[in-house]
Length: 244
Image (cartoon, rainbow, N blue to C red):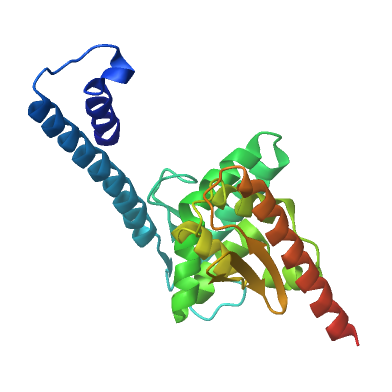
């Protein structure tokens, strides 16, 4: 709302947008425009802060009940469901999480719900895995339900529809350099970004794809296709090396 109000204040003080001068005093008009810009920037900052705050709230734990019992993970690993995307109780067990995701995937429109859950929790879970420790194993178990197990990913050299969609959602816009979300997705697949003087480059092992430094919304589909092909080629090569 702050961002929208900021844009409104700027536009109503620009004659060419409104057709008439709302404020006759130029100094007052400039002051209102400055306030509008401040509100717009503040609104954007709040949205970013809220997203980071949500990521920091993602947590997992083992309830320690019947410790050491084989196969206890499905009933005793829990995700803190702060957004209640899966359960109204504010937490969900691994088994219930698995059942819910499976039921959504069977439904034609359920993929949208899976995507909402993924966008809410996947990044936070990846951060827990990256930190290591006991919680990393629990977070990986939930990620395996959302994204497929590491073993299945290693066996399958193709890139799945869900993986392509994840990359596509991250690269909905291109500002000339990758933003935070885009870098996170790249790191997930082992892709590095190299910034050059004339162009950028995405690199995965010895595979690389150039990218323009010019901001362009149309470039998103091309970048998504290039990254997906690079991931597929790299997986195929790894499979051949293991077989030889």
